[in-house]
Length: 174
Image 1 (cartoon, helix red, strand yellow):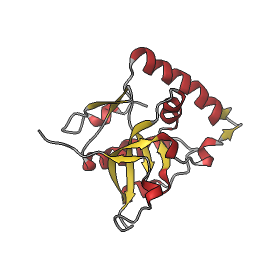
Image 2 (cartoon, one colour; image 1 turned 30 degrees about the horizontal axis):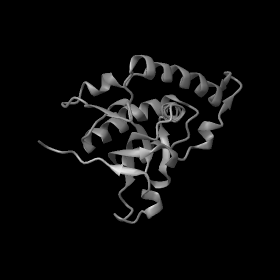
Image 3 (tube, one colour; image 1 turned 180 degrees about the vertical axis):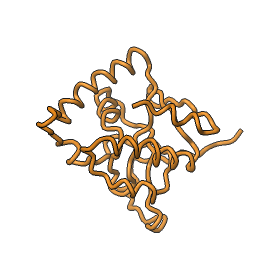
Image 4 (cartoon, one colour; image 1 turned 180 degrees about the horizontal axis):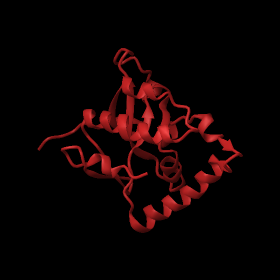
């Protein structure tokens, strides 16, 4: 699913950034990230009947652009272990094929990708399983990510271990 059409409605263009040789389209404004997550990503998850993520939770989070260590992420086993014999779907087999295609697109054509979507609590990957697995296969250690924070949790209460491998992006003005 292409995510570009929905961004045409935003007033600011999404900048192109590179990290460890990988190109990303990023949204810097927290308000625009929130809108993107709660429209585009929510629609993508709704369309995927196998995804078990509670969609209403997306609207309860504050979203920030950050750099995330790929090894820190946790996965939803209901997504990664999904097999639907009725339609002949096996997540792991599908992912394997998609990794090869995305890797070729990145290495041969310098395809630009979107940041991962991660819940801060538990560092749970919500969207971007193929991007994450492809980057790991390419020995990339970090990725841009839209990270959702639960505002009901007091600021600064995350443990040192939870913050390991995360770098908050601060927009600079010139």
